[in-house]
Image 1 (tube, rainbow, N blue to C red):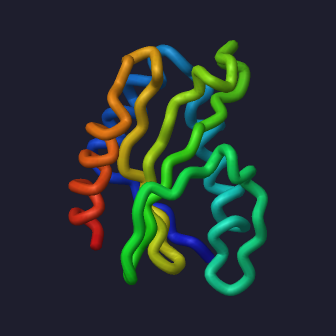
Image 2: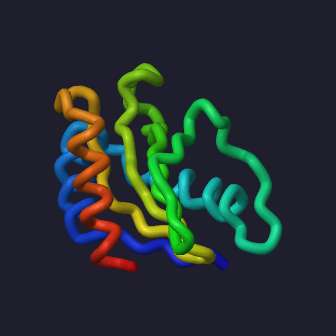
Length: 122
């Protein structure tokens, strides 16, 4: 079974997004279920489309990913869904950052932020 961890900072980012998108927790729960299949350490199966899952970097210990988080019943178009960065190490998935394009973030800045948060876990 996969263990899901949330960085303290992503908890705050989720709370901010929840004010705009009340169903964000439903999207997170659905994504966790997909991750249990996609990143299963003994029998992984692809259930997340490659176009929706982007490997940012990896080393011998962990892999950093970015994905589009579907927020059900939010009225958002797919290109407006929040982007979430997370790291996978064996049976541990740690969610690091989440930002919406509404906030006009810079990918490279968030990649660096996510990398700095990885060190809080591994």
